[in-house]
Every structure is written in C-alpha cells, then in structure tokens.
Image (cartoon, rainbow, N blue to C red; front, side):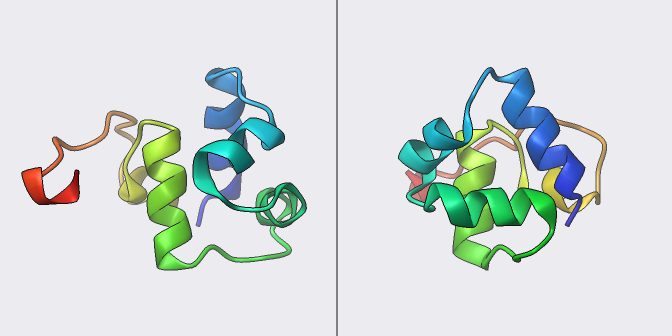
Length: 77
C-alpha cells in the first residue's frame, strides 16, 4: 500500500481525517495510523477509501499511476 498516496489524495481533495472518517466509517485515530503506516487497511476499508477519494484500489496500492477510478459496475452501486 502506498501510504503517501492516501495522504496525498486526501489533501488534494481538501479532506481532513475527520472527513475521511465520515466518508468511510473508519475511526479517525485508526485512519491516522493507516496514513502513518502503523496499521493496514482491510480489503473493505481499502474499497471505501478508494471510493471516498474518487480513485481505484490499484492506484492506492501503487499498481497504476492513473488516479481516475475505473467505471463502476451496476452491481457495485
């Protein structure tokens, strides 16, 4: 997981960690630990963070440099 990408995108979007808590349901203190590399995201948490930051899980993981999310399937909504 490219932790700097999570922090970078959050700041780009103008979101605070508290805003991320509201968007993802991940407690702010836990989210802070994730950004510092002291805690890992579960698959479900990574999915929620990617959706909140309007990106893909692949971008967060460093597998692509494309920030834009993939088109969503009808089943994901």
